[in-house]
Length: 357
Ligand code: IPM
Ligand code: MG
Image (cartoon, rainbow, N blue to C red; front, side, top):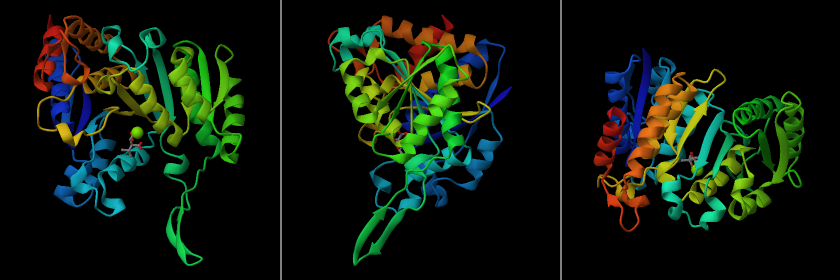
């Protein structure tokens, strides 16, 4: 029995997580493996109830479970709060508390959605790349940080910092993933300007020696952004720091035209993980039953694959999603003329139906 902590969060989080729970219940009913679910609070919802975006109770629950499924956090309601109380702090805090340093963000173009991309279909068709983003270090967490008064004016500081051990461990993650895919890692940095990136590049070269079957190349982040929109299929695995990974993963996700389709995993060194859709809490469409639950449902598939060692069940979910797309069902965000547009809940039901057929 695996214990899963469910953290719906804010905005559309609750609606999409509810669909993923239908999928988990169906897997529980029809297979040997049981997943028991526990609910927790994070983000704005946690702030409203407890005064903190990441209550101690949530960390305690997280440390006591096998995996976490997260919806999304944030919304206009909490934007004017002091920085430490904002929903995003809950997300950054849980990543850091649990040392979830390895963030896997796949960008896959489903052939059924080829015309959802803003790029020409010959440039993106068949796209399947994986961004491995360092998630608990770099400029997101580096010190010193803050805003102070200096020379009589306000002065803002953040620090991009990495220990070599932090670079090496994300490097190992990336190379091990590449071994199971196309056997190429492209490391993205800004080593022509930043010393911390010079170290990044050096350590990636050192780590690569342990993986003679995988090739390593390097790109500066500005060029990487350009290459992603020019010829994204040249990439297999991209490994990069926290901030660059944040930016490039949104860009890569949009190449597929369907950010509502993309799951992610954030893993610690024991492959304990938190799984969540790549997209945010979309407060503008929350409560309308129109959000796309597929990224969250596919996050359950990633959880089964990476943390719970249940590849067969993961495949079942992946196939169910493809079946439903093949039948022409779409939520509004990925719908084109002639598609059958369905709401959040109906999409969840369709996936369960496909799983059980
Ligand atoms: C992401 C998000 C977060 C990040 C925000 C919400 C703190 O943009 O997961 O990509 O910057 O890491
Ligand atoms: Mg982001």
